[in-house]
Structure formats: structure tokens, C-alpha cells
Image 1 (cartoon, rainbow, N blue to C red):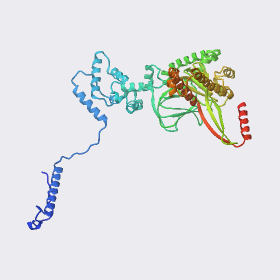
Image 2: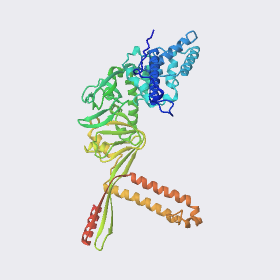
Image 3: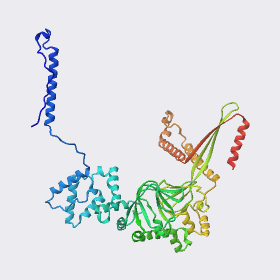
Image 4: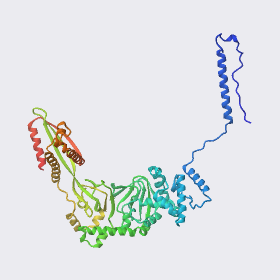
Length: 540
């Protein structure tokens, strides 16, 4: 029996007599207040009774999504327990993620049909992973889901012993490794064998992953984090990130490390030992070296070399892929790499400084001079397959005097400075400089070339204006609209205007820096001396 507590209201009070209220009132103020107190008391008693009679319950913490997913799978398995269905969901939680019930039914039906065609469950799972059919589009396309469900499991899969990995996990690992540039053109069998041999390792910030001068005993595939490559102490050659492969060069050549790699942030990497590398990838790398040797023999400079010497050089060449618009090096950078183009196009560009001067009178004997100094980019060579560059400044031991930029996606074979001088004799270096593809003209010649380009564009535009014989500046004016000739050439005029605008935009893009300087002159003598100084600098 539940006890109900009833509270009494107030103390006993004297009854209200008719003499205590006014003549017109039906109830006195005291009666009204006591009636209100009584109603409040009854409401409180009712609330307490309901609280006592209510069943007690405790608030539970929300369970993770995997709990509800497993519950749904158990319910589905019980429902189809007696049916002819071979599909099981043991150890598939990591692969399927939050799958909807309709997708589960479709997958089960696929397995039933596959059993008739003598295919295994693992084959069906492999097809589902490759086709991404087991997830709804709105979920599969979300970047946060892809980062957590797909990439988030790769590190754990690598850390899991090989015998404990499911077929689906192996397929996820293979798919991730295939997306790395180093492995994207290798056979599936080779990638599968590589995945079976990889070991997960971790590095802290500022840890030395590879040290220059050490014997190469393994290579690393970076899974997450960034690292810097140093050919010389305190000089960063490059910064690498996820899916980059480091350390394979020493395994190919059986020589010591040629650079140091230091972690810029915490890094998770996959390690492949030299023994496993020789068993799995060495034959494939030999095939790549053969293709590199074939490319070298097609270049005129290397045709006089013996085949053994070309093969020896190809052992040191490293293939690098550069996207469109990437600058390989700029003016003033260290000369530490020699490049041979295997595919794509590279533009060699130089910087040219031009001076523009405007002057006008501001008084009887006063002039104002505006001096504008602009630095332009001028393309001096466009190199394609079989061309090489970067050797001149490296032989002369000076910083880069020009910049190299990718016009399209480009593949280059590269060799660093130390190995370059190791493979090229003094005579070879002399011949290499004589047969260079990049001839750097003097700054005066570059200025002339730039002025000639500007003058040609202006003269071409002027010739078109004169040939039209119409009001080019105001084609939409009242007089132009009434002129029959302007009406006929209207489309030509607008196309020409667009062309001029594009040329101006292109020329502005070539301007790297710009400085303005304003000078006020109070005498003719100073103006003449200033003009003479400008002529002398132009002559020089």
C-alpha cells in the first residue's frame, strides 16, 4: 500500500457571518482568499498522489551506433534463419558500417544468386567493395564518412596480424595502397603481397625517419602526417605527406641513404623491409630501370655512352610526378637536382626588370616624374620529352638563375647533386653544357624581347582598328548605331575588345612585382640631368 500525505490548510478560523460583508457583495474578500488557498492545496495533493503512483525509471546513456546496427543484424538473421541463405555477418561490422535494411536484403539476395554460380561469399564482398554498392549515395559521398569508415580503418588493419584480417579488410588495404602513385600501375598480385608484408610504425614530431649516410634496410609509406627531406643540414629540399614513399632509392642501388627525412608532425607509416622488397618489387623496379635506360638512349647526349654506363646511371634516377602549375624551382634556389623529362612539358622562365617613366609640368619651372619599376616573367624555352635541364647552375656551383614551371602534368627522372657528379666525368660535364637545351640570354636581350612582344601586340591592334574604319571606342553610341558599317562589324568589334582585354590580363599576370616612385623637380638643369642619367642606364 502506498501512503498518501494530505496537508491541512491553515489554522481554524471563525465562520464568516453576513454582517462581515458589504451589502452589494456576494462573498467577502476573506472568503475569496480562503477559497483560492483551498484550490491550491487540492492541486498540490493531486500532484503528490501522481508522483507517488508513477513508476520509477533511470536515464541511460545513449548507446553507440554499432549497438543498434548489431541488433538489426541479429533480428535479420533470426528472421532468415530457416531460409536458404548463406550470407553471414560475422566480423563484417567494420566494412559495412551503418547499412540500411534494404541494402542488407539486397546483399543477401546477391549471395543466394552467387551460390548458384559457384562463387564464394568473399567474391561477392570484393565486388561490393569495388563497386561501393552497399552504401547509399548520400552517405558514401560524405567526406567525413569516407575519412572515418574507409581511411580510418587502414592503420588498424595494418596493425592486425595477417591471419586475423578478413577478406574485406584485405581488399580495403589493397584499394588504399593502389591509390598511392608508387603502386598505382603495379599488378594486383604485387600489391596484395606488399600489403601482407607491411608493418605499422609511428614517429613523433622531429623524429628522424631516415638519416643521410645510413645503410638502407627498408622503405616507408606515409599514412598520415608530414615530413621534410634534407639533402644538406638545415636546407629543406621538399615536404612530403600521405601516400608518399621514401627510402626506396637506397634499396635499388644498395648504397647508403642520400638524404635525411625528419617528421614535421606525428606520423603513422607502413614499413617494408629490404628482404620483402627484393622478393616482391625488385623485378618490377628492374623493368622500370630498363624503360629509363631506353629513354636515355633516345637522347642524343647519351647515345655515345655504353649500355652498361647508361644502365648504371638509370639505377640512380628517381621518377617524380609534378601536377600542372607546380614550380620545380625558382630563381635563387639551391642547385641540387638534375631533371630529365619523361612525359609532359616544362617552361623555363626568366625575370626581366623594366622601367616606365612619365613626366609632366606642375608649374612654371616645376615638373613631376613618376617612375614605375616592374618585374616581368619571360619564357625562354619550352622543354618536352627527352629534354634535360638544371645542369648548368649545378655544374657552375651557383644558385638557380631562372625558374622551371609545369605547363601540364609532368613526369621527370631526377638525380641529386652528389650522385650526378659521381656518374658524370669532367669531359661528360663539358659536353653536357655544350649541348644544353636552355640558353640563358643577357638581361638586355630579354628586355628587347619583352619590348618587341608589347610593340607587336599594340601594332597588331592598331592595324585592325585602321582596317575597320569605324568608331571603335564607342560602338554603342547613337551615331554608331545609325552607321550601317558599324552594325555589320559590331560582332568583330566586341571580339576584338575581348581579345585586347585578355592580352592585358595575360600581361598583368606576367608582372611579378611593381614599385612606384614619385619625384618633384624645380629646375630645368635637374630635369636634363635626370633624363641623361636615364639614357645612360638604358645604354648599359
